Image 1 (cartoon, chains in turn blue, brown):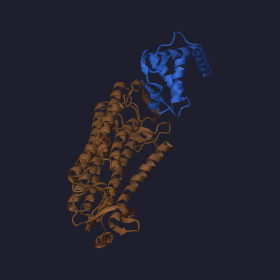
Image 2 (tube, rainbow over the protein chains, first blue to last red):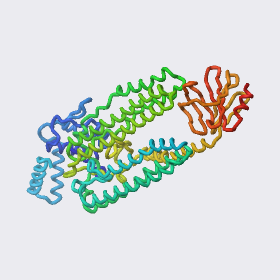
Image 3 (cartoon, one colour):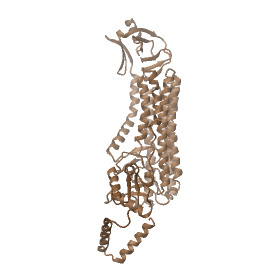
Image 4 (cartoon, each protein chain N blue to C red):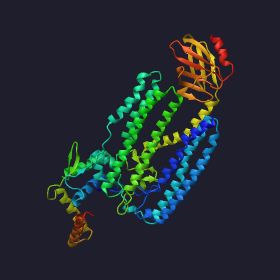
Length: 123
Length: 447
């Protein structure tokens, strides 16, 4: 799985790492049980600070996408079924934004379906 | 410096030219989708305009090669070592600069062509690409135990010969230095070329393995060189042969490893660049200098081969590169300094406290009360330099010979006789002077 970090964008690097790992797990590019690099290796690879890499892993761990061991580094896992309160809140916010952008219910659902299909195909 | 020695020096130093030429020429072959420092997609690597630019680059390289070879010819007729060194070092420094010019020209032309033909869509290029699967594969560093035997070997002479302990220590230091270079001059980063993790992992392993191999060869060669020096120190030709073999082993292994890695990179990425491929061109000035303010690391791996370089966006990187540049430009000064040494006379004087030989601001002395015996030498035996200066006009420092063993010299070999002084502790000194008759005068005073 390729991690692509954009240093000129507004999204913090740790957030970009978190988002891309989540997307990769959802699309099957990263499978449960698969090893991720250690915090040090990830920082070395991306040329980022160890704190940034550690923050991304802490976030992924707290959301249940990875487990971390002292020696083994990080391992991918599937989170518990169902969306957590933060995910639901995020979804609600995005729907509000789309409604304010002038989209109707059918359009939003069609868009969701399209994105879902794309993700399922691993695009 | 006789014509024979000029030819020997030429033979030793000239290989730099073909090495640089073939390395630069090798940049025309696509490796990791990179040609002359420019990342190109698969179809562009075979484009006629690209091939024409590369052909022009090759022609320019060939021309430069002949010009630089012709420029080396006058040095065959220099009789002064200092002049030869000044000329040679200036030539060697100029060689890198001159060969860089067509490379930069080719790099710029390829970049322009790339933009013109739309081979790069900047908005789609992310700033840093990492292969998580390849990054998860831990690097197995060579154990320091591999470097311990050559270190122990290099220290062996120290147990048998403490008179020139600094020479053995100097030799031995190369071994731990090799380990430190191996461990800390390498950027542990996966060689991402495209989305193929298996390819990335193979390329990464090749670089890691060969990086370790080079430093291990360096460590073992240095350890064995130390032993070789110790065994042949009193035999001029053997000692020179050992030094030459050591230099050859290190150079040949460095060059062959570099080319081997390049060949493997070329082979492994021959079909890459057809779909998604990594393009890091925006981080490389002229395709050769790394500048990435978003990278917190100082040391980065070169794009092809096994070498490493520094990140010029970091202050420490600028300082390192600046120091390297200053050192390179200052190299010809060594030759100028040698010319001064050649011209400076060797002097000998008796002061109130002792016998003092001097040359080019440096002195070697024996206290008068320490002098046990003084002997006039009419003919010099074969002498091997251990540490010091060995020129046709002056030999100073530590030498050894089968007749006398270790001896400290401060002589002008052209003007005899010379004064062999034995100190109370058995140390031998051989003094001389450039001025005719000076030695006889001093000898009369001492006796």
